[in-house]
Length: 136
Image (cartoon, rainbow, N blue to C red; front, side):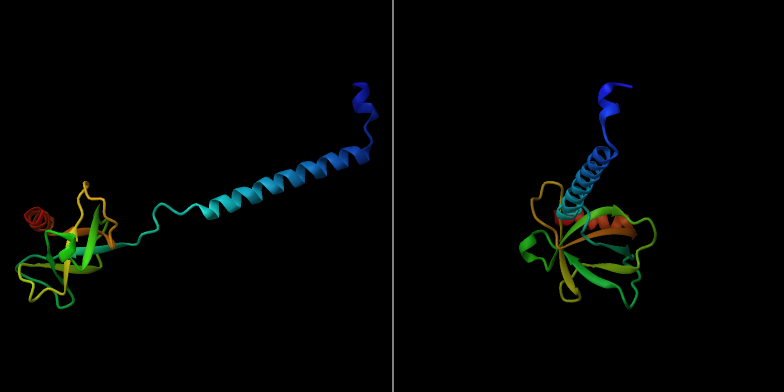
């Protein structure tokens, strides 16, 4: 043993241990504050929709019209992809604004607009993509 370690009293070791514990607690508290202050990257709620075909739509289907500009839209939508399971709400793509409950503008990768809602969809995806392509 070195002479220094032999000269350290138990009280001195206790003080150093307490100081180390206080420092660790302080750093953990700071880390916790930083974690709470940083916003979660995926706070937006993603709505799930099942796209129903032109031949049939359920009574509870959200009947929407896709529009070519965000100014015309009731909702600006970002599509996050395909739902892992069948979407709990159905949407029917209208061709006429008279029967549509809402007008949606679908964001593209080029748009610098904050969406009102993010969605994932299942169902008749070819019909969805075809109508989105017609509006853009």
